Length: 285
Image (cartoon, one colour):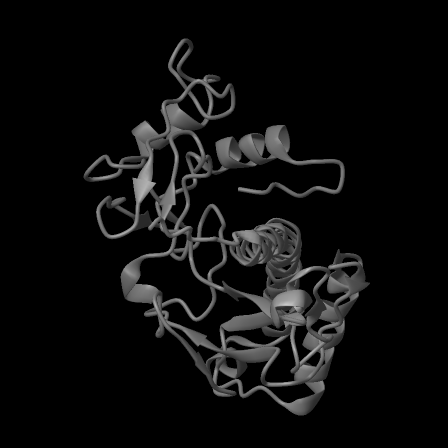
């Protein structure tokens, strides 16, 4: 006797189709909503970078308005903090992330002002030198991103943020040809000033610190030669832009700085300045 086994594959097909649709929706959500979140985060990063740089610039301007002693003991106050954040916000509001403007508010989850040691930021009001910004699209600030397809699989919102820190740190290296003014401040001057209470660059004073780059010792004759070819025709010089200024790396390269004995070369310094200054009488070096 033969037995006939009847099989119904309709249910199996239905389950397979449902599974495929779920996977398709998930992939579409990843492509569309994930892509939108990725783009928004990049926009937030740009806003954070710009705001942090603006905050660092404003903090630097505050220090510029203080005396040397006041700079050393400066503590951030509410007025200065408000001025920094206002400046940052003006820059940030020129951009959008995820289709909306991203204001920078006085919120510790958004802005912190403090100290940067090269690897770590620490919020502090005592002698701050850095600004840390987190540009956000989340429940803390500006609202999370609403999803288009991910809601079907239970994800209705996405939170994104980006952080940036700007610090007032000294240059740690300069490329060849960049340091085109052979004056400097010796290491021994930092913090005390030694015999010079003020650094005044003149032809007769003892506080006119200068160098001839890596020459040791620095000599007046070498200085005259590199400043101007008026006395030494054909010699590479700074005025003509032909002197091979070396690259400099902090902590590695040393310039041998001396002071005084500048009267013979002072006019050459003046000539160099006159050849480099802009219409406002400024020479950025």
